[in-house]
Image (cartoon, rainbow, N blue to C red; front, top):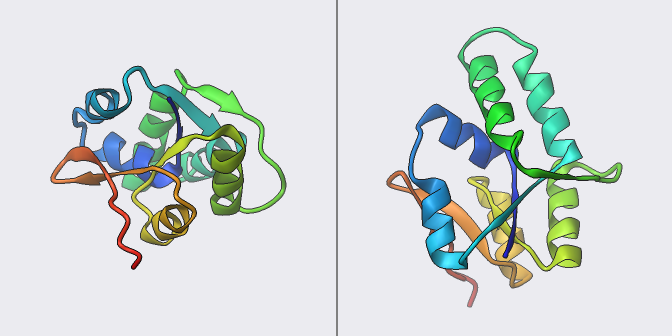
Length: 126
């Protein structure tokens, strides 16, 4: 299964290493990790600064370095992630609650972090 990773998820696992990849693999079989070019651009911008956030972004870039890099358009990262998830029929790994809500509303499978573990977000929309 294809899984698109956003910067919030990558930054979270860079900051507090967990078994996130194994957790996702347990639920998807063999995940195909994907990062969009716009997400890498966002991480590079953050990594160019100073301090803890920049260091975390540099670690997130290292993690994403082993992922397939997909091109993205000119929209913002969240819109590009939604569009790519729909066109690729991919799940998304994010800790961004607004993005997660948008994805769940479109019946896109979402992984987030809970207690240091990657878990599936359940559809809370009634």
